[in-house]
Length: 164
Image 1: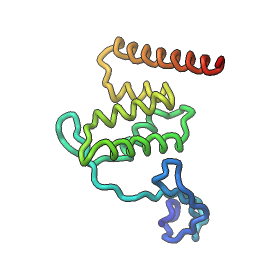
Image 2: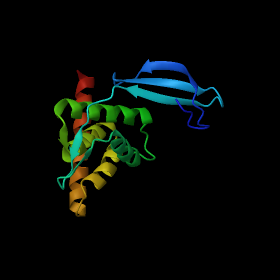
Image 3: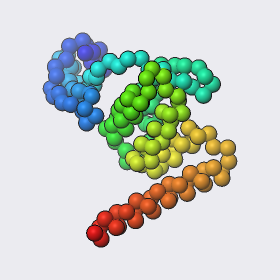
Image 4: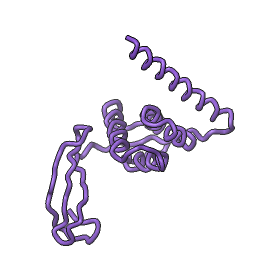
């Protein structure tokens, strides 16, 4: 494995463990040349999956595209990289188990929205503002009302759980 700092091609594995998603091995490595420590992930190579875009074109499923979109939406939010990695792993797992060979881009977008709604409301709104391409303020207000209703519902449930 090449070092991301000095590009030397030998490193030692310091720690190796299964990631939370159960399908990935996370390895901490140290470069034998400059002693920089870095993390690598190892996973089984999956069969190709094509995404059917809104205009009917097809492109290769890209885990990185989902990661980048969520990272952008989560900027300056209390959302860790591990949280985002776990969300993306869960989305990928669901897509691969529910679809065979091809998946509509809208299905992926909806899965991302579902996951982000549970993770962080602001990240959810930021992602939705790009994904949904709101046409006017009324559509944004409707989304915010849905989030408000969900938060109130969660609070009521947790309050009921505390009184039981």
